[in-house]
Amino acid sequence: MGNAAKDFGSLYLNPSIYQDALAKVRQHKEASELLGKPIETLFLMEGEVQYSDNRNAVKMTIPIKGSKAKGRMDIKAKKANNEWFYELIRVRVKNPKHFVDIIDPK
Image (cartoon, rainbow, N blue to C red; front, side, top):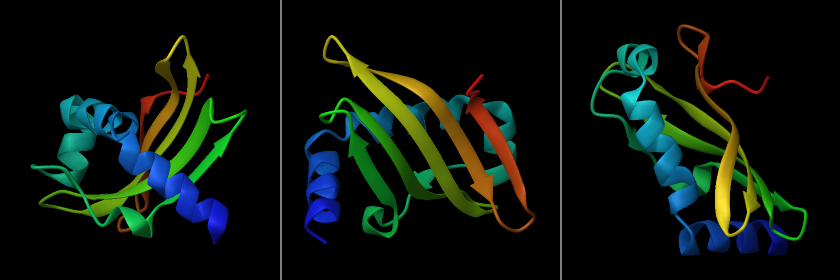
């Protein structure tokens, strides 16, 4: 539990990682239609956060919801020159099973 708690603690100290990704989701037409507006985060501790590469890379899953559906926002990002760059932002919904790539991992 120690590393997981530390990773979530880091997320709370640097919320821009998921907040900037959430802003991109809110601006994405297909994601907005799938989830409904407004799109908000749910209780963050229900998600997952894993840092690697001396805290210069992160993978996280954040629960989100809109007026139509609940889902998860998957994020992969790397830090360079004190700035986070997204490799992946994906919205996943269970019911109906569907996903939308906001930033494609290609």
